[in-house]
Amino acid sequence: MQALQGQKENHPSGRDSADDEKQKPSTLVRRGLIPETRPQRILALATFVNMMGSGVFMVSAALFFTRVVGLPLGQVGLGLGVAAAVGLFAGVPVGHLADRRGSRGVYLWMLVIQGVAMAALVLVQSFWLVLVALCVGELARSAGGAARGPLVRGIGGADLTRYRAYLRSVANLAGSCAAVAAGFAVQYDTRPAYLALVLGNALSFVASAAIVAALPPIPPVPAPQTANPWDAMKDRAYVAVTVLDGIMSIHHQVLLFALPLWIIGHTDAPRWLIGGAALVNTALVVLLQVRASRGVDDSVSAGKAMRRSGAAFFVGMAAMAAAAGLPSWLALIGIVIGVIVHTVGELWHTAGSLELRFSLAPAHAQGQYMGLFGFGAGLANVVAPTVLALLCIAWGAPGWLLLGGVFVVAGLVTPHFVRWAERTRPYAKQPA
Image 1 (tube, rainbow, N blue to C red):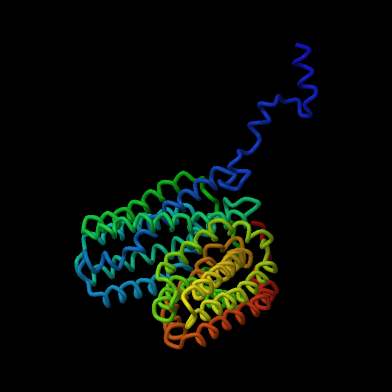
Image 2 (tube, rainbow, N blue to C red):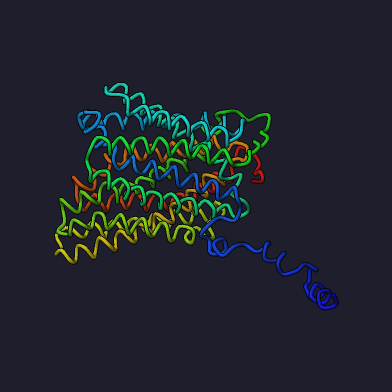
């Protein structure tokens, strides 16, 4: 008894070592492999399942519509483009609904609607019905992204910056797994294989909704009496930052759209480098996004990260452009260096963009402001293929340098507009 009492007295808190072990985070948590709290882990799992299904569909969508539904490729491109454009307009109003009614429930229902719209694609055979299903799905996707913003903020905890970066890494890891899974189905190239991918995506939305249902409800932040559903649209400084981020967001399509066409049509680099570049980009994002986001925890540091990203995009695009006309091995080296530097720019841009969309938005209107910010990034994805085709592919190396210069300018001016947004915020800064 005396020995036992002595052990307890020697312990500063009077508890035994077993109690301490229960209080210590696990090795996986300490190493940053899983989030600290249960709600954070739940949302991360929902993110992985959701992005896994969406990634599978993105890889195989064109083949599904042409080989299974029987649509001409021109109609497929038109349908996907129209749906993407229509989906842009759902973010602000549904984001406001999430702010006032609770983000978890709104996000959950948007996932369910996406699942229903995706499942409907296996039943339709005409272009117009396909277009309706795609538009409904895109509206729900855009709205869900706006509703998810307050949810991430609500459960992100004290280290919200790190958690956002972690979710970004999870999404990229899911995309890589999705590409592998879709590759097996494409290899079979049969109707049942493509139907399985589409239905798998539909099930992923439903599964994500079921996982999100396990989250605790996030109560809405009380809004000032003067608040209204269109505050974000009236916040000119925030709109300006959104436009600049949208311009910078065109970089997402550089490695996905422009680089493969550049490698095939303008360089002697080996063709396998197309897949290799995507692999390098994804691996770096998965491994380094959390680290790259350290210190980007307010609007000032976010503006600086955006400025650094613009410079990195220019250097990376210049290296990729220089590969034209070089011997095969030199072209390979130039493109690999360009991809690595471009990805560094992507890491900085992501860190800055995520911080700005949260920190410049009032706490009571996170969903509404997320919807507006998502509109800018979504519009960039719609126009990016055309911009990249005209500049990088049709014009060649000068076009790569010109677009890189646009990124530099956008990055340089972003901190000035961030300071304007801080000075003219429509509501006093509220705690998260």
